Image (cartoon, protein in one colour):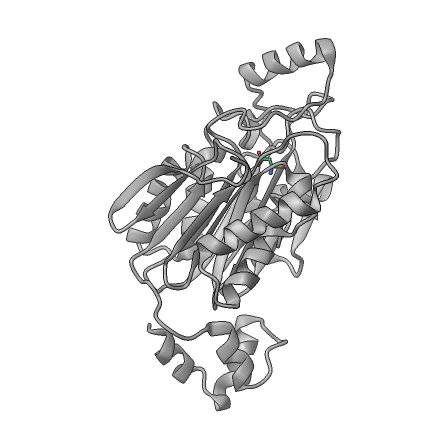
Length: 333
Ligand code: ASP
């Protein structure tokens, strides 16, 4: 459905009913509806854009989901699930490196095209945190569940406990215990937290982000990845953004929300990502340690943005029948 016909569809007389159907009780009046659903040309070919090299596999799954009739939110969930299930990945899912007490704890979030959001943090022994995040979004009145409560909810929805421990992660943890030094290492792998933004054949947007967080973090630490507005933000009228990197620095900068707001003001996604990376650098200028942040964005026209603080960030883009890894440009040269 074209944007314009969508706007016509949601006329003044039906605005209240439409807002109620969408669960958007805060929408009042025609102008507000127009503002949210946007104007102008919308790309309709389908897009999956995700962080790091492994994003190619996630994009493949997302595009298959779309071809089978899935919406943007289905693409975002099914795409990152592939990476969550890949126990060789040391930064996502139950194969991820543990916290400093030896437990792998997972964070994930998802946003759909009608403004809904779901998130889980500090979740243990559940294979697909992104699916739990989606259940929080669709089956509860809440946005975020953490720890024991999130696990209890997952079990109540039919999920089962998974005791999987990656041999590689256990070995790495034992080696780490010798010195027990907490030092985040930038670009440690070419597969890392996966953040994904998607556009379906209707031109609707969604996104997801899932991670086991920083290796050897303090128990209970949560980074940017499951935080709506930091690790992920989607506004179907404007665009969607996600990222990866040292979560604390992204949390302080609300990067994903910032990118979407810059795009709302008319900025191209590339420029918006560049501005957001500069903001990350500026807000975190008190830090002595070197760190990495990589940000991605897509707008309603299907234009893409990618930018990192330092060299080494890669991303995967599936669009127009291609699905390839690209090297991101970066700020500190
Ligand atoms: N952003 C993630 C976190 O801080 C880590 C990463 O992207 O590698 O938990």
